[in-house]
Length: 263
Ligand SMILES: [Fe+2]
Ligand SMILES: [Fe+2]
Image (cartoon, rainbow, N blue to C red; front, top):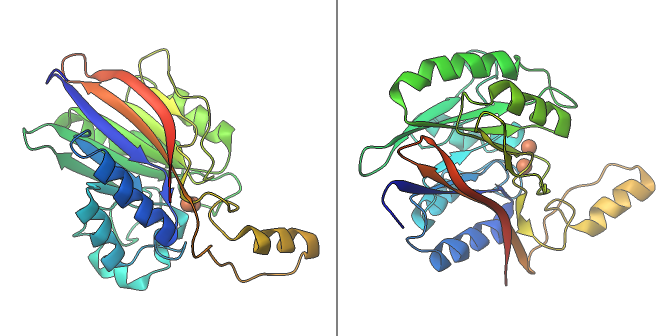
């Protein structure tokens, strides 16, 4: 690959042990193929948050930066380390929330990539406006970065697409997360920003968004609260978005949304 191209892989929400193992298998298979690997890790430990140990495991498999979302707070041990690890949480949480909403990742040859995490407000907990916080983050990062990538962790397709158009031409790529279902709408917006509504999930293939489907079916049949458990074994599905950044044009040149299965 010509060296003006920089290859990025974004892995959808990693859910539990099956998801973590799939990431390891995928990155072993694709060893050396990507210059930057980003993964959403909000569900990596038992579906709820991520422990420092599991975060270190993912880094050792080849993940460079983790993004997150509403579930990131479940593993309390992580809070003390959120500033030191390459992990971001949504930038539009209240001021003084632990961790950071954006990070600048630098490649071995000095390329600076800003990664911003935002969370939606429709059918989710109330937060600061992701549109206006995006403006602030872009203003803060754009002078010192070559590319800006956003993980917009949100429930509704409309809120994600609207943010996409709002930021079109001001950031390099916007990748949605949180629904755990990959959407078939990856594209370039009119002013060049790459957009996909949802990257999908990395976890049990036969599950309801990562959780044992028997439990979720029972929940819908009975309307009774259920204790959510993840499947302990079985096939994994890993959803990902891969794209190349052109160092000269400062834009995305190739892109795809794909998935892989692992036993
Ligand atoms: Fe998630
Ligand atoms: Fe989420």
